[in-house]
Length: 305
View (cartoon, helix red, strand yellow):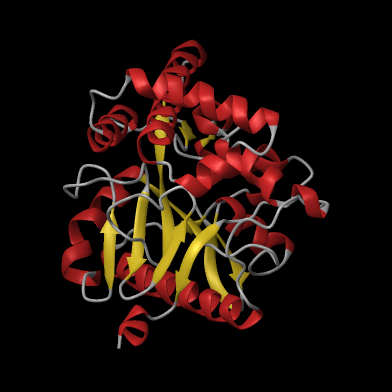
């Protein structure tokens, strides 16, 4: 199942369409991300919540002992029950320095996961350039949800989750994608077909509110009981591709990320092989995943001043 990001990656590697960070900006961005992670980690320790690196950040920790050289983000994961606690304590513990965007919490949901966004920064992606709320430098936190121990029920669950997520993606492309996104997707035949098909499906969903669909998806996938299998419904490989035994995630193991001690999945090898297959192999330049920014600032107050 190809994501919109896969098409953008293919296009961007052949055409300089988006904002390129300078070496100094990249260093400062990474220091900012580490600072955000440290603040969240301290709150989680205070409340006894389990927080670990996820996705490409696990790959970075294992293969590079830090950020992947061409990557500029941090992905985190939490079990669903701890994810919900962090939502509840966020305002008291973190709202002085950060904003939060997460389903079933804010009035206008703009994401399927949790974004913890540093105030007075700006980092807008090609996906969200038309959103009314500007986004800053952020870390993503993905909830880990339990799915049925029964293989057949689990298959039905994950198909349902993924179908709903695809519909949301189509609606988002139709409803909020900006001109830069549209033009970049139309630069290849596959990208153009993906864009028009998604937009057509999104058109038929237009009577609904996007934020309501985000909230409904979040409620649908939320674990209601503990089982022996977990998935990340919002992960890079969708629900079906991210189903793993719970023992792959828990209890957490320890590792290093940019000289910081961090939590990793219990079996990082199994986790990474599921996501990337031969994860120790450095991909060729044209296969490296990047993030595509349209605007970027480490200090909007300074700019406005």
